[in-house]
Length: 219
Image (cartoon, rainbow, N blue to C red; front, side, top):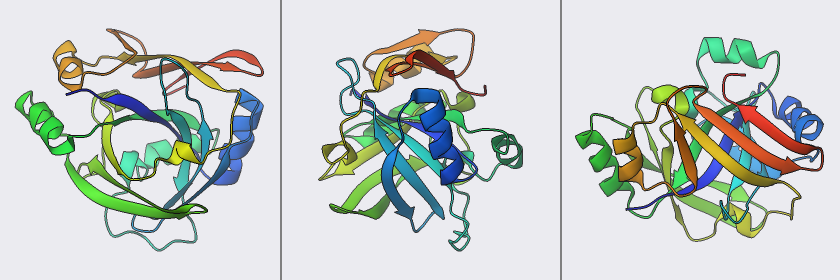
């Protein structure tokens, strides 16, 4: 089994706030995204692929105030009151999603190590190029494990979002995960990721029009 970094998740209180933060911090405005009807969220996307992380993108995600409550916890722990309070100040790097082709097998292997990363559920959203479809793992309580360092697993069906994203000057050059056990990393077979014992759960370094920018989760 092996997984690749699919996308980094930046949580914002609103998409407008997230887009303004992105342009001010990374020097590039995010492109369009869409609505996640079953989750009551919406997003905007930005390509960040590099030689080390092909087909990677940045997702700015926020609760959609116009959508009805989903009747279940939203993904990535977005319902957490402390997180939402912090987002009033600024968006933050929250999580990482890893792309795989054997999501059930990988989840079972994680459970054997004592990490219940949830079950895969089918999801989809409309885009200008048609319907995007995927399966994504999620816990019933919506919570992230290891402070977000344990990636959420995603398995795409058909078109990948980066196939239609506009070209971007951003490049994800390095990603470190803090506190992810080596045995878990071995099961995932993560490509291009550095493991560290201390520090933030996620630390991402980008080449941007503003120079090198590092984002740390929780900061």
